[in-house]
Image 1 (cartoon, rainbow, N blue to C red):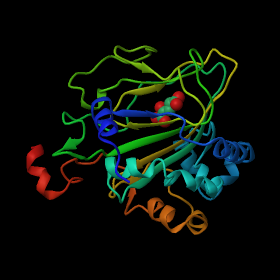
Image 2 (tube, protein in one colour):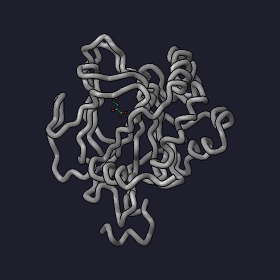
Image 3 (cartoon, rainbow, N blue to C red):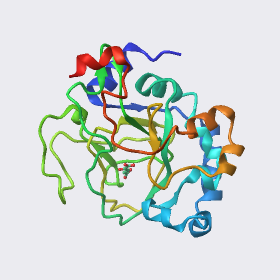
Image 4 (cartoon, rainbow, N blue to C red):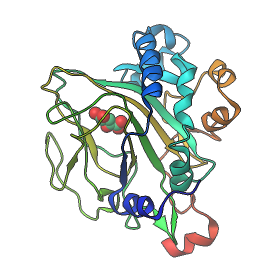
Length: 266
Ligand SMILES: O=C(O)CCC(=O)C(=O)O
């Protein structure tokens, strides 16, 4: 189903969407059980075939959650998200990495970063999105003020200037996600500057994170799925998990868009 003009406009100008109340109570209960069952995964054992790849993993608590529990493949093509990914990345979008990601009490906060370079077009050309990377947060807990919120700089996917973000919690023009309910979904262009804030509360923020790219995107180093995972998921999920390019590299935007559009970007 095509996405609405309003949401397309909002994603273009802001670089993100906050979709509220998407996951049903039944879904939240089911996914909560999956998380409870999987959050204590022995990540050393999960990576025993290639311990070297753990240097790429956060494991707070489990990186490569789809390998740990292939039912998390659900979040590769969740029906509420797939139309957005098809619009922003193309219908042949691919997986880049995936995490079960908890922000615990006393977390000191992360570092401002982005996964891909900003572009003056905001990764849109001739009415067509050409985003190299879009990340999806399935929010599994309510998050209010001072509860280790996620934070972004709206519009920074087309930023023309840099800002010193080193060791800073707050940046100008930021948007703090401090009104999140469990079941909300946040999608954002990885060209946005983003971060996780310190968590002085007694609550853990829990997120299922899946990162996606265009048809020619490789996985983030250390996130290639196991052969047994590819056997366990659905054919559509297997397609999304099967990357033609082995490892992610910053794309040459001119190569990742249809030939007819390339001349317009030079
Ligand atoms: O949710 C957070 O605290 C930050 C996550 C993040 O920066 C990322 O997934 O790139």
